[in-house]
Length: 219
Image (cartoon, rainbow, N blue to C red; front, side):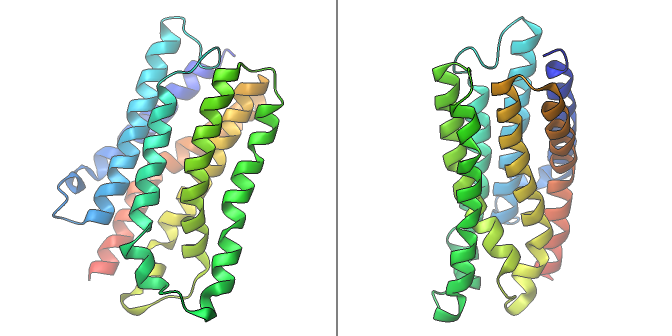
């Protein structure tokens, strides 16, 4: 697809700008949560850099497994880890009243993994489908917490409220990432352009929005 290199370059520039805006968070002593989000966006930068070089040198993103997929997996592993554990325990200690939010949050992983169906039914290579499935598992796991933390009631110090903007953007990135994989598997330039524009926007905004939320939370 003729727009593929342009799309990856655009996402690379936007993700790099977002990453640089929060580079101080690489010092984990500042805020571990923010540091993990920053490192996740760093994984996106590295993934797009690799894919740009691969495409520039005549390689393919769909003929076989390519390590750019590992960057996406790494990014959503950081997003998952940031919300899992300490942050989630602050907003949900397993109370029965919150059971409905836990059940609704399951819709996130279910939707993400349902997006694998057109990929698995496409004419793409088996190795590409396998890498998409691996991406889908991690993206879906992260989406559980993104959906949950968007809906669950706030707690003391406004942890949930302050981070809702970030979680909304991360959820959008999850969906756009899967739509991009669908576009690649089916060779659809129109879907690629739409998902690419979405990924540019969220890659650029994610760290600044998270930064504002963390500052409010810590004050």
